[in-house]
Image 1: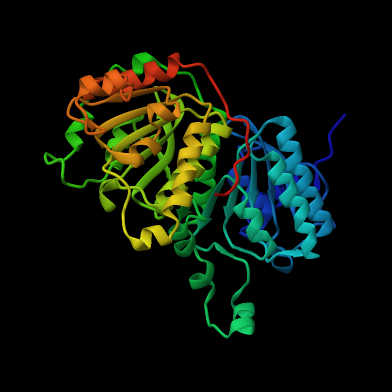
Image 2 (image 1 turned 90 degrees about the horizontal axis):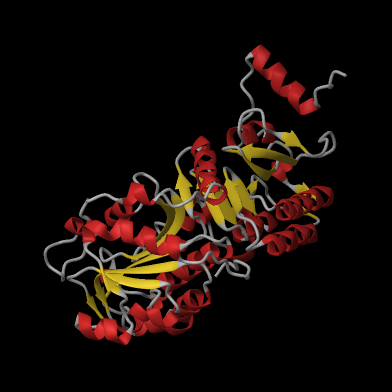
Length: 435
């Protein structure tokens, strides 16, 4: 029996035959850039709806996706569409597969309908990866749907705000254009956006890259780690000089595999996903280029959210430590250094995934404890020969249990892989609240 093409498949076929350029806001066009070719399977008919909910694949792995329709009332969602999106999130959780939302929406009508989506996202939190792609405006209730995702990817045209310029002007008389109010530059600096791209097509490419890291974690290939590159050569000769830790992180993980998240927010800490011996890992690293790599409230909060996400989703962790302490001062204390700093202590102490700490240079004070110390339950702590853990000599550090072993820099990748591969698999049993 010949299958009758769906209205969506027919529309795509007609567009291809007539060489008509699709409207870039069309959910089918957007989702076709996200999913593997030919894998898009709508879960409902859309004659009376603007939103598209579908199942599909990314790099062969099953995913659930939804896209609002920016061509229809600015992508505003009605109660039925909110319900269908909430059901899609629940479906993804039941199938144990990622869910990706493409948000171009000025809100929901009635506003309380958004609660269905929020509740579903919280139910799925920590169970499956949730990604939000923002290629256009996501305002009002839609903005919080974006913010509940594990990873937010914004294009240059993306806008994210609780209230638009007109409402801002009406309520408090302030003038603000959409970009200044909620553009990617704003949200990159405050941490709401994890990844920012120049072009919309790149948001889908980055989403695919991240989904693959989650869905295709791989197995450790220890033979691939038997290299003799010396990553310590990337450190400055003087222990007092700052340096950008990102080239060091890129050298420790597999080549070209590292995806940094929230790069513009709290740059004194670097966090991101990559592969080590072909296995997906999360990396948290102090960055001495900014504030000497010292921890402050924002850095601790950024790292804590990332650690909890990795733990909830079963991603092993590597902590690269070069920290002389916390950033001191009245402004730092007023910003919540104690309250927000405790989040990182809690996140690491709670984590069930394998987690290895590498001390490359300094590890002093309570900041060193917060960066996955042995006392917080680290799977193992290793250090380079010239490092100064806790201002002790190595004999004392090893006897006290602060350091498990000294590793030569050229052997670091191999040893990290061996330690992670030997550790029992684990996964946290908690949600990923947006800290």
